[in-house]
Image (cartoon, rainbow, N blue to C red; front, side, top):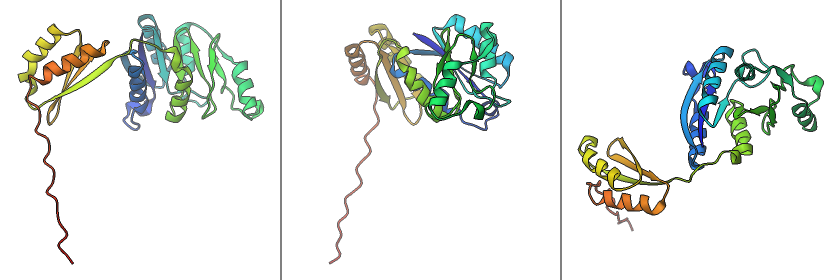
Length: 241
């Protein structure tokens, strides 16, 4: 299964808010063996949301959209998703009934709180108020991290993929000097390889078969220079009496 993640918010594009939602979702999908192939941030603008969602829903198995959910003036994500699908927004009776059960009177709710694209399934907000929505492979979640995470956990089982195994090999060599061995690794084993330089180079080996990944990591580890372990600090003896 492959997915695209779309985060909505002017504050994200202005650098005022760190996009932790995208990172968290990518980590959760990765655990489930689901490939995230796009992460895109768009402004609080209906046309941009509609264009990106419409493009991605044609290319990927699912599109997960976070942010801009609710009844305030800049919460326009539901409008954008509805526009992408060519559907109107409608007050969702199931969402309203659930909110009433949670103690929210319909008369007290801000107008538009439970407006979802026509035909959508409501995703209840266990932490906040405004519901999310699922429709035609598009999942709309709140932008508040606690609300987004709780809502995603309620639908997480709907995303599945092939389990992926990983092993890291750390090399104390320049990344450019490792290219021949990495290429040989790819030729010998059915794995994917990524290299990430820092003080040392971390080489990540991934694959769908745990024994193959382990064998590949062992093979490479024998052929690279590994960092010396940090020496233990000398022990001190309290000489006072």
